[in-house]
Length: 237
Image (cartoon, rainbow, N blue to C red; front, top):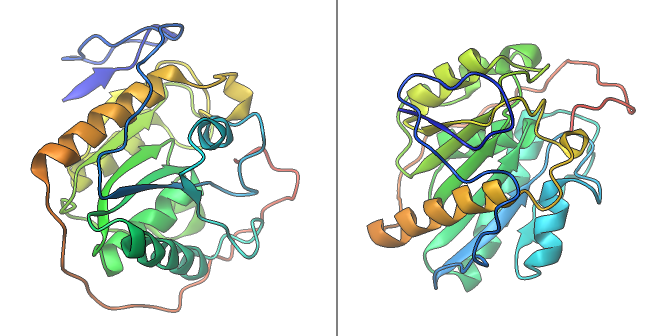
């Protein structure tokens, strides 16, 4: 089912349910015991005006997955950093990591989930990058993920249509959220602290807490590297 995430614009998908408007405050997020939140930014990282950075300021216990080269979209390297972050999280959070990913960061999180989902308790996937743009569709899971996920896509994302994003999300078993007309749901979307997104994450955390399980499965690896050329001034963040 597709749900609507507020009143920012765009047609509501069939079967959409209501959600709080942009300006409505949400209760401060409480991360259940045993879980660690990891933010996974996209290309060029998330600047200070990006909702990921603002969330990190609000919740200093959260950790960011840092990349060696934010301008190089190498899926193996990026997913390896996600793996390292999840491993670190498991040292302090027995129930694993909750990934809060954006754009190419979503693909890195998903690639790691395909390789080895151990320690990933759930994921909020916001405006995923188009796998076909980077030639990585075959390296992403084409099955229902063994942990809860929420995929958020806008009606006017210039980098991937909502229809395509939702098609992928259906394969992964994600809850699909129609964000309205918010572009790439990044700093240019002027979301400030994006209280609606915090509400979606709160719902995901509650679901993880109620399920209360850790995953244990995995498969092989590869040496693929993206050949896409990305300008250092690209707004693809």
